[in-house]
Image 1 (spheres, helix red, strand yellow):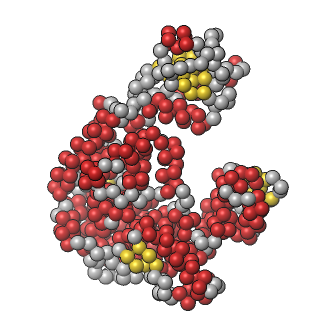
Image 2: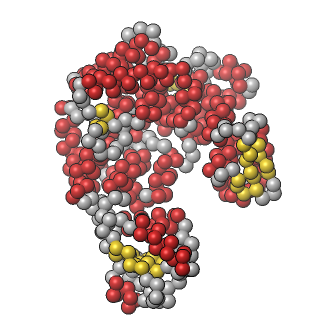
Image 3: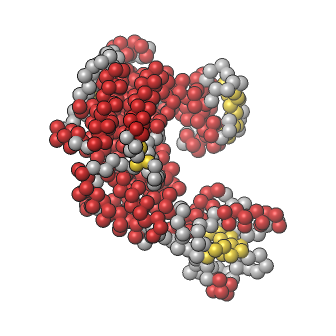
Length: 496
């Protein structure tokens, strides 16, 4: 799946050029032409054409050395590829269009076409392309005056998501406003500490981006509309009053003393819950408890009790499992009432989690895919929510005692190599799992019957066909993904 930022770029060659720079960075500045063909899914000829364009995008301190079979990136400065990509990103037509629209700079399609040195018809094609991507966020750009059309909550969440993919990008665009964010954050923490209240377990960087997005949209007169009944409900929370007393003053002062609508304060209060880190903690809160969610909590607990059973969460971990997952569902339910698009997650994170935690993800996806759960949390994006729950669950799954009690290992190779593999294997064994390592006999069915292992792991061809056993044949030199697969096999024995 593509990053949202790359989806927005209309020019395929430009998109591929930026991707090549990313690949070079991840590959430590050198990559084969064949590898680029595979990653970009294009012909060899197209790779070379794209490399020529990529050369034109680089600053003087960076250069590409291109041979028949290899590409090397040379850097004569301390500037990173990330900074270079940000500089390129700011020059793309999609970024400039979206920045002007988001910050409401008041340019029409003719003025924007002139600024980008393209025709009006070419600009229209690019806007239509952007609008296809914006469908997921239930908003769009107008074709004439380049303004966002749709629910303001959706527009803000799109802005937050889009700029978050290049984390430094929005900070650079709005760096003069960062002191405002720091002031709000520090004032809030100071007030809560003075009252000896526990602090929410926020990700500071994410909260900062949300505050910037909110401030920028409000500064151009784009306000949030929220139902009065929802505002009244949130207004009754003690924690909201603490937030309100700080946020209202700081935001008003930053915007020249304007009156801040109550809906804006409610928006910021609720939106901040999107930035919570779901680690169980004695010091930090994972959600704001309030009378208005007591009934909902009971429904959530019933669902999570069943999930704790299915995932075989052990007694010592069960309370933290219930607390963290309940907090996520409570916060997501509240965020969804502001806008369902808050459920949308990062596409690259989704791909990574499905690839690396596929079985755990499948358990959550199946659990969410029924009508009873949809009543508990109306699902706008089941894939994103199941991925989020998978990631939160992983902290318990990977640390708990596994149901597997014994793994039989048979490694072959030179003496020191076998010692190294055994040492590495021992570091990966979860609590309660014993490793049985054999060297002076082959793996036979008779041996398996005697040891009774849950899983058999080997890096050579066994003498006998091993039937009715869970086995993992590793490469002679086991790869990282094979160790990851072994960990998955062990953990999968927990699921019911």
